Length: 163
Image 1: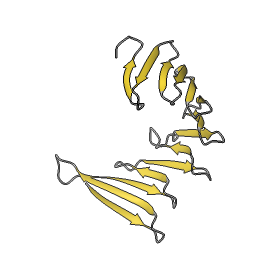
Image 2: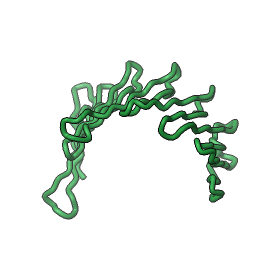
Image 3: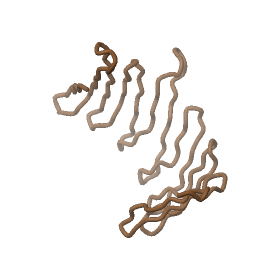
């Protein structure tokens, strides 16, 4: 794989091009380009087929929008929107179908609930160290998690009872 990076005078990478040669046909080159703004945020990806995905940010550097390439030529480009609370935590994500998934976060920054029109409501419980200990999905299926003394997950027991 070859990489080529274009820099502006201020030394911020503004375009990164990755090229790779396919193993089966040495003449085929697959190139993807990644563009960045002056503070290092990814602003655009152009895939090997020339399809473009763009990323937008607010003044605080939080990603607010992702616009993908249209699924069909001349079609509408799918857009995902992100909304944050005052502590930079994602509170809502609006998908390309305008369906809103909402997140409830506790005072420690743990996501305790996710409400989605697609998957229903998922609840989560955490221990005092901030480790996820229990997740209950919209169907009432419970997954439990255990950790060792240094907070590494040691067990995950799924609703079916399998580890």
